[in-house]
Picture 1 (cartoon, helix red, strand yellow):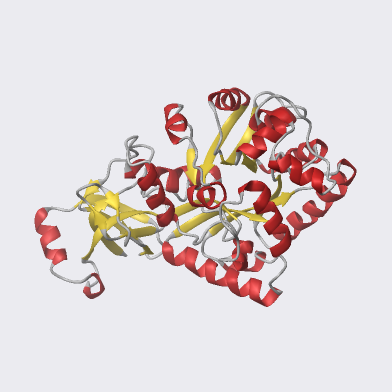
Picture 2 (cartoon, helix red, strand yellow):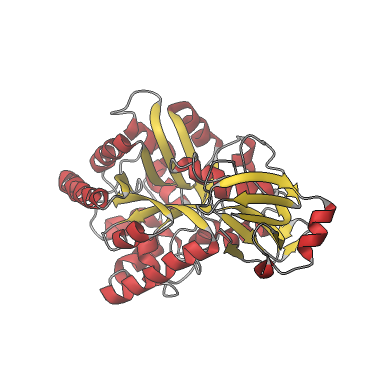
Length: 414
């Protein structure tokens, strides 16, 4: 049993709607990581604990850290199997340029190098305090790592294929990979990638199969190129596909998110049930938001700010998303479109570009909202008695402005 305290303790427990921190908060955790008690230390207790270094704390004494404590993070969108692509992509190419790069570079590293890069990131995930992750897989190379990792992974077997004639074969291949993951004890299911990489037929059958698990992950409205392709049949993404003699989705005159939901409604009861994680949302607008809220029972809206800046030099309209009280989650995307897989760096990015958003709200996105999106809210996501969420320290805080600093880092404490 350990007693862990810091200047501020963020529980991100939804029972406390404001997510307000506890000053000099202390959490007692059992040897198995279960939260046993949460309390505020007295001034006397703080003074006694502050006189010794945490590493010199005896059994039963309080470990006191300078900084803030929060639950383990839940990375709501990642492609950890692309970790070997760190540092090789050009930035600001737009989606069309990014697709050209991924097609050219994905297979340029041999398997031992790919596995070594993944292994390093799995270790990094645990050490920085990630407790859960919604991870995308296109092959089986990450499965053994996930099986042995203390981090919980919900694996989405991502499908894509622009030609209608290939739809059933692509689905069958994805189901085989899904079954391989499940045989290893992993929570895994197929999922559609995006509107622009899939024929309508494949999108529909992939979503129908994936929703049998109760979960989908879908790249949604990541770029204006995607919107232009669906709404008008124009733009760089449309030209990219036609230049490769690939089929493109039908021009609908509606937003890309509406197009996706309309495919779901072809086979699903209304409204569509299941935890549907809509990832990126860079060009989401009110019309799409209204349609999603009307037609989807439980949508989640995940943002990956550093990835969006890397590819598009753009960010989601968080003022609009917050105004509509959407359930926002936070992810890192992959090292093909990011320089580092770090939830703290994503938080810093948000605080730089959206200084009006309180830290406690962002931590709610990074913890309990992500845990709910992957179906682990009863175990992860908040410091709540009975849960085993992991305990994380974020240090070097600017307490005057209530923000992380350039030097802030996260570290798992329990």
